[in-house]
Length: 352
Ligand code: ADP
Image (cartoon, rainbow, N blue to C red; front, side, top):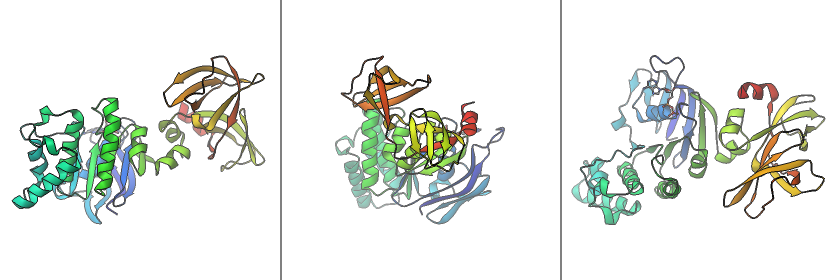
């Protein structure tokens, strides 16, 4: 393991609840982990604990099997072998691209340093920009410099704090791809802080979902999307509708059909079944009991809002040429590979 957090908690003075509570996590070599959660959920606190800018009040942090933090003992950030990419890149404005990148390499001989800087400039695609200053670069280029500077000393782990938040959406998508491929190419171990589930899903091998300072779920992106363990997880990582159901025999009876009960619930239990837009298919049907309310065209797909006969509204994503008018009667076909249901009382408490 490159990083291990064991029951780590952090309480800031004057704060009534912990910023991070009882977090246990492991990150393997070469793995990219996304710390995902809404604002204030504790993502930055966990990142800062790993970097050594904060020390935990409880628990232990190991980097490359060595204890670097425990209450009262904390190895300073510069001795941890971590590279940071900050939200605003934090480049040195008075240094050229080349000198920004070579900044952390003073321990190397002149020739080694020169070679390393050339390699990094090539890696981040900035060989032709080596003599420019940060203000002469675009946002995406500045970010590449920040990544290059963090990678240059061969750190054990790269920590990225909301690295795409100041880029416009087009650039953001491109930079996610570029940064991922640079991290993969170098076999880097990385932790990325983000509030955007699409960013976490597209870049990370594993996602640690935080809520109110607690680790809500830790798993692969697919695992969290398809089998969320809590209503919060279900709701936070993508559009989800929740439909009432009741267990009868080996079935889950709902308004949109009778599903196989592959859940932990038993006879008579009242549940809420999670349905994602990609679980619902539509078919125009004169006798259909559901009605299309409206459509949002999103380029690669159409998103429909559909009203069931009970009045409940569900969402369905269809391919980009499946265009149906508002008011059309339809039949719904459920295509679920994973059935996720929550106890009705737990769901009511979450929605409160
Ligand atoms: P996130 O990165 O998910 O937005 P943070 O880790 O920044 O969350 O914050 C978690 C909680 O800790 C929030 O309630 C925040 O207000 C609080 N917090 C963060 N930094 C400090 C600080 N230096 N002093 C006091 N409270 C803080």
